[in-house]
Amino acid sequence: MKKVYRILAINPGSTSTKIALFENETELFREKLSHSSKELAPFPDVQSQIAFRTEIVGCELARRGISPSELDVFVGRGGGLLPLEGGVYRVTELLAEHASRGMSGEHPAQLAAQICKMFANEYSKPAFVVNPPDVDEFEDISRITGLRGVYRESHIHALNQKEVALRFCAARGLDYGAVNLIVCHLGGGISITAHKNGRMTDSNDIIRGSGPMTPTRAGDLHYMAVLELAEDGPASKKLLAERLSRRGGLIDHFGTSDAREVRKLIEGGDKYAALVYDAMIYQCAKHAGAMAAALKGELRAIILTGGLAHDEYFTRKMSEYLGWIAEIAVMPGEFELEALAAGALRVLRGTEPEKEYTGVPVWTARDHMPGTPPPQ
Image 1 (tube, rainbow, N blue to C red):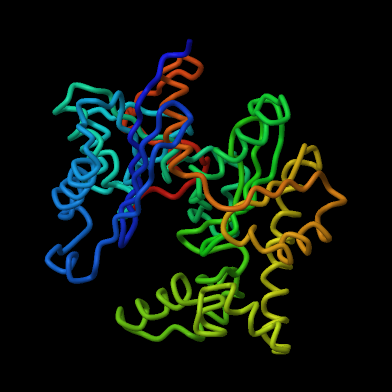
Image 2 (cartoon, rainbow, N blue to C red):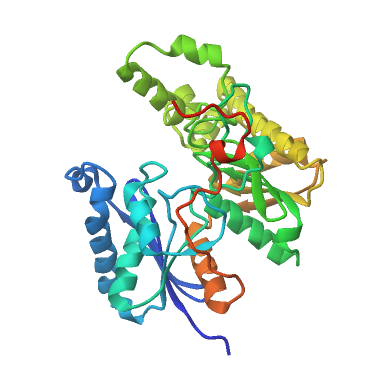
């Protein structure tokens, strides 16, 4: 009989902390622990929430009659780290310390490793992070832009991207490390990524802004238009950044990021809503086509995942654009908590080696790009 591992998965977001308990692959429960603006108001930044979030998780376990001492491993999303390869990393002192400093920028995900380490230290159990947002597996050729010293960076929905790719391959008896795929994570943010022999070698940028428009983001714009929108002064730049990255896309057009609300407008005969929604699909398909070119047309499938993949109209239109390239596989929703548990389980069972976070970024312009201007 297989050994039964009890795994607690932790995924902090801006206004909630999602947790789930697994026994091997079986989910026992999941809970979204919401944090009101009043609860978060006393904290000046994300890092200062660490004790609050840890206590909330502990209280939920206690409410369910679960002692952390009964668990075998704690696993979190990770974040705040320097660029690293995909994989499962043990939470060491260095990894937790870098997460606390937000080495890649402040994000609630940076709390996950620290919460896991607090539990792991207290109960002498291991803690891991799995495919954190800081995964960078780009090929150098995909980084070059038309400005010397400005390079494209890897900012992708790494956790869900890797998980759906692994699930697709497992269902078809394929080796993820030996096939090419395109994964389209279609949600409030959209990342469309080339997976080449188990590595995410190219994608649009969900943080700094590139790719198709999304429910919340403006997507690619011609840069002269952006310059015309910008005004002098940090306040104006901040407002423009907010409009481009958090209040663009469907929000800017219709005041809502809920695609279901836009679909209702379309069903009510709103031709402009239909045009904008179709344009979003069109742009997603164009970027998937670009990733197919990056893979030289050699790919097994195009996988559609994320919340928008629940919309049959969206996936059907994507299939019309892309079905001639490869099989279209629809895997709606996100599997982040499942991905965390699955990654920890692979390490515990010895089917995947754990990795060590070195704190040395896998890519820097100075080390990898000939002719990079020296630091100013």
